[in-house]
Length: 126
Image (tube, rainbow, N blue to C red):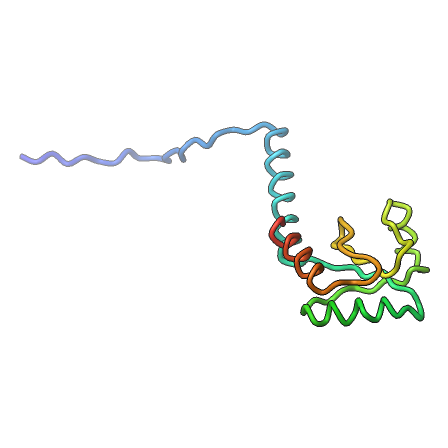
């Protein structure tokens, strides 16, 4: 005689998930946002080129960046954005100045070889 087992009638309980406190959830969300932002900055490194008018070294900087296959967003040294950068400690005495958003990569007369090395180091570090 085979006995048939019947499933219990009613609702079954879902498996218990660990309960996290509000602080733990905020910490997890913050660290995931930081990771997301660092991944995005790795993929899209924005170069800023601060230039002046009638600047032959600025022309050379554009040519070197073009030869390396990089684009840079140009900012005029007299613009409010450049003044804000200067207030935050970016040295703008020797134009042009190339920034990766955080660090000065080059200024003055750009060397193609040195800039290629500098940009590759920044891309690897990110």
